[in-house]
Image (cartoon, rainbow, N blue to C red; front, side, top):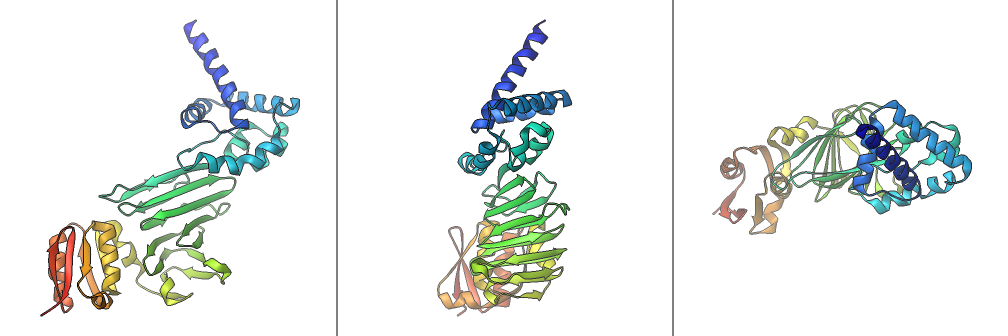
Length: 316
């Protein structure tokens, strides 16, 4: 008997939360509980279906108003709210569609953040694999026929799950990148966005309405080089996900930025002109002690240890 009472109590709570969620955002705890409750069985989804139809037909909820407020509600909730119980754009016909359909349309947002001392490998809700550099952060929003990423900090490598019906978009450094089943690296470098396409195709839309650039596998884009794609060793760009930093004729300033992002070690230049020297080589993230001799062997500089990194001076 206790079990029946518990079940009745949960059903009453679910009904209350569904109605509340159709009118205003739920807090994270209530939203998580309701998601878990609904996922338990098709019967529970049918119950939500019945409630929604009845409320819409009786005028207890206004499907049009709920749909119009959906975007504003998501902004208010922020990235920490991974679920929201509200109808999306298709709810205008709420009395005629099943709960499973409109629940699938609701937008889900989640923030991923790598620790300050190591990278993070994560699987997104659609099956996309992403590696974030140490201290990196992104916000992923899925639902309503779209997959949208805001890369907020750090470097990221994406291996996108194929879904032709829902393009995968990344916003980074003022650019919008659109892919359909592809793998690419995105680095919001100090001098401008860097994108390396390992496989598939990728469209890059620059800020300001300039013409889009189309990247094919084996090509890269560097904002400082102008709006064009060039053939390159794109595999080197994702070597950091395997513990290596690979540089091919990069400025020492770019080397310094990459070192700081992936290891926390900083290069400080005694003369700013030294940052323009070009460096080619491989630096391993598991052998930081080897960085000093590796750079000194290639360039006319001396590295002196300082707190948190090295002071770079011209070789005497």
